[in-house]
Image 1 (cartoon, one colour):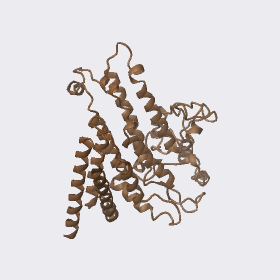
Image 2 (image 1 turned 30 degrees about the horizontal axis):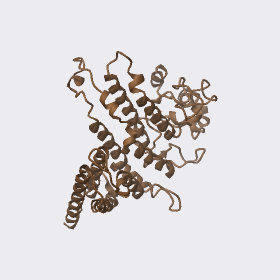
Image 3 (image 1 turned 60 degrees about the vertical axis):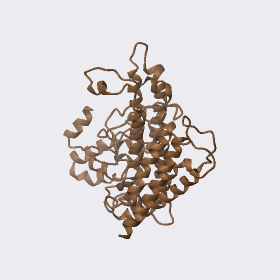
Image 4 (image 1 turned 120 degrees about the vertical axis):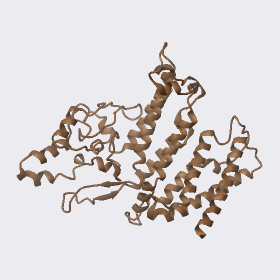
Length: 404
C-alpha cells in the first residue's frame, strides 16, 4: 500500500494490467514464490491468491509483496537520462510491461480490471468458485462456533455470494473483448493496436457465467442452510433491525441472475461482439452475436429441450422457482430487444431479428410441453401458460409496430 501511494507521488498512474503478467500455475510455483512479485506493477489492485486443492500443488505468495518490473521501467523512463529513452521504449512489447489505467477499465481490454488475477483469469475464477463451495460447506460447522449467533452463517453466505458475483463480473469482461496496445508504428513486436481475444477464451467466459449464475446448484442452497441464516437485532445496525429474520433468498438469487443477464446482453457487450466479427477474417473462428444469444437462450430454457416425463408436483416442480424467475427475466430482456431502439446502435437490427427468432423458438418449445399428455405441476403449467401468452402478444405487437 505504501509503495503504491509513493508511486502516485512519483507520477505513476494505476496499472490494472499488472496482475495479468503470469499464469496462475506460474504464480503458485517455486520460481516465483518468494523470489519476485507475481504482479508486474504495484500500481494494480490485485486479487488475493488462495490456491484451492486440485488447482496446483504449491501455494504461492498470498499477495504481491514488492514493486514490479513495470514500475522500474516507468521510473526509468521518467527519471533516467534522456539519451536512454529510445532504449527504454524499445521494451514496450514485453509482457511484463503491459499497461492499462483507469479509463481503460471502461474499454474492451479485459486485462485492465481491478481485483482480477493471472494471465488467464478463468483459472482464477474457477479457483474462486472452489473457495466459495468450500466456505459454504463449512458455514454451519466451522464458520459458526459454539456460543456464536447464527447470524454469522448469513453473513458468511452473503460473503460467498459477493465472491461469486466478483468472479462472474471478472469473466463477463472477456465477452466481446479485445487486447489493446499503445504501440506505435515500428515498435518491436509489430503488434496491432487492437487484437480480438481468441474465440475459445470468450466462449469459456460465456460458459463460466452460465454455469455459475443460471444453474440452481451454483448457489449451494439447502433447507438446513436457509433455516440458520438469520440476523441479529442490534440498533447500531439499523438495516439488520429492519431486516426479516429469514433471508429473502429468491430476491438475492434473482438479483444475481438479472445482473448476469445484463453482463451478457447489455448494449455495449452486444455491440462489441457484433463489431468484432468484422475484425476477424471469415476463415477464422470468432464469437458471433448469434452464437452468444443462442448460448444464453439454450441455457436459460434448457428444460424445454428435455422429455417432460412425469412425477412432478408442486413440491417437486419440473421447473424450479429460481429457474422460473430467471426465465421470466430473460423473456423480459428478449421482448425489450425486439423493440431495441436505444443503446444498441448499429446492432439494433440483428438484435431485433435474433430476439424475435428466439421468442418464436421459446413459444414453440413451451407449447410443445403444454400440449404433452404428461401431467405438469401447477407452478410450471401456470408459468408456461403465461410465457406462451406473453410471447404471442409481444410478437404481434412487434409486427404491428414495425408495420407502422
